[in-house]
Length: 250
Image 1 (cartoon, rainbow, N blue to C red):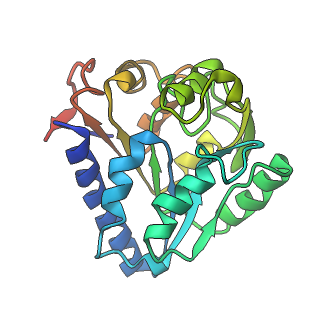
Image 2: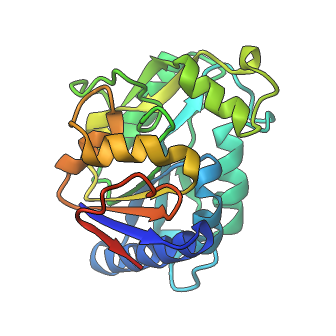
């Protein structure tokens, strides 16, 4: 695992986007297509803004999946991850092949349908963040490290739901759905490369727990340390509690 620390989240986002664009272009050159998974949330704003401006990426050769979606939330809701992906990624590029998770119908059926598409080929690149409770996608602690299902219907814990309120996606806790469709931990780890984007001071305790603590379901994103090709992008705030071991500062 490579850990890279930057002065602020704007520089973090631009640099992570440059890395992602290089990886996407190399994959397309070698294989003709890049199958990717994108994260959502406020932590990804600067990164996706920079990435969608990358002129060297042939977006028509990208096949897109996303990590998770709330159960029961319409695409018109400001917190909908489908809406987020449509507005911040698909709508700004030439991506035409994409698979969105619709949590309004039967979530188990949706998980199986999109999961079948996902495992029909290799996943080349995954973008993820780390939640304030250490979650990876919507795999809250204690996370299931064993499930082989591509997507799962999961329960959201209060810490996760409260984060969504604090970020301004919902007015209060009662408005936040209690269930979501989430990519499984094992499926995330099947990707050939993972880029982790984690800015902001509020993420510092989770970053320390996941990068320097025990690899444990209690700190779901800690499992990323077992992957052979992971780069973590932090700013000075999110990295503020780290000992500095193994981190490269840019």
